[in-house]
Image (tube, rainbow, N blue to C red; front, side):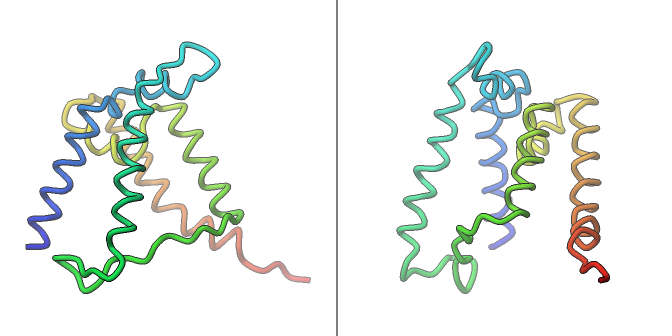
Length: 142
């Protein structure tokens, strides 16, 4: 049952990314180009994601999910160096390539070579991150 819900959720998410234009790199870069040829249409995608999720978090209190023992905890609101640096890297990559992880995966079937190269680089970055963090966070000898 859990696998079926995961499959259906992933398919719905991918279809939503495609229909909304999130897999179109020029549309995403137009959304991010606020001082140039700005395309505000992805603001509806943003609102369409934030508003339902806000409501969903409110409705989960005191309830149990269908396929798990409990809902995951709400994310921390602490803003630290890791979050700030990760956000900076994510935003820079998103602006330069016009893709982030969800749309990158959703566009693999039709996006061409660029999307596969981006996906491979994304996987390498995900694999490297814990190794880089261990190196950066290790204590220095006095």
